Amino acid sequence: MSEIEIRNLTKRFEVKGNTVTALDNVSLSIEKGDIYGIIGMSGAGKSTLVRSINYLERPTDGQIIIDGTDLASLSEKELRKKRSGIGMIFQGFNLLEQRNVIDNVCFPLEIAGVKRKDARVRAKELLRTVGLEEKEKVYPSQLSGGQKQRVAIARALATNPGILLCDEATSALDPQTTESILSLLKEINERFNITIVVITHQMSVVTRICNNVAIIDNGVLVEEGDVAAVFANPQSDAAKELIFEKKQVYSPVETLDGERKIRITFNENSAYEPVIANLILKHGAPVNILKADTRNVGGRARGEMILGLPEGSRLQEAMIESLKASGLTVSDVDGGNV
Image (cartoon, rainbow, N blue to C red):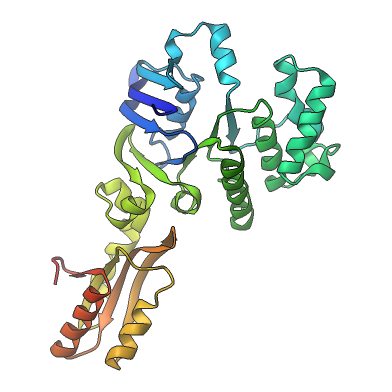
């Protein structure tokens, strides 16, 4: 049985006399110990989905089942107890400004009725985990964004949750800090076997730490699966736009110079395999990279390039055959496999 089962989840809101459907019949299964990404554009419904997982938003229809328990069947007291096993971190950190770092981490333990001495021992342990043991007496206003998020992570782990929900947890951070926070989350997942659900609009976050991904578009689940598989062969328009930045990549291609333009899609290639360099060396002719959108996903290159081939139909066909032999899908920019 999956740790998190989302079955036929629908959430509607009444806004100024109109009914807005934020989620429409969404079903997902998330296994214990997974790092699961839920991605979509702004307004897609992903934050409503993550808030439904711990019943901060109660579904209009459908079920949220955690460890075999339907949350709708619980009393308010039972639900509060169940929520103690579900930590949550936010884009805005949500720290208590009037409390120092260690008191922020202790806060959920106080609510749970843990003795102050025991709470502080637990908080100190968690601050070591997130690398902030020397900041325990500092106040949030004195911390950087990355340090604030580390405090928020420590606080979310205070009650020993089995699930950690991350709602756009890195969106307010710079790239270097984002990388350090993602590394910390991956370490926490591996060390404590905590199931992590990552809500984001950043595909780079998904490819960095997630094993599986669901793509939400206008409240509808349009695609899901293994991250590498979705990257290799996206089916939905929403997935293609998120992965390839479709609008920026495709439209200007026809205006580029060059006799023949081809699109290559990476499927099985190692991210460290110099495909284009090998092509040039083999055929002794230059190749122009007109567009490129590739990423390292689990050690494999995923994405696509648009190449301008040198003149000569025989040379062009030989190059295309070499690319196919390297495990690439090749098509003309105007459409159709070659």
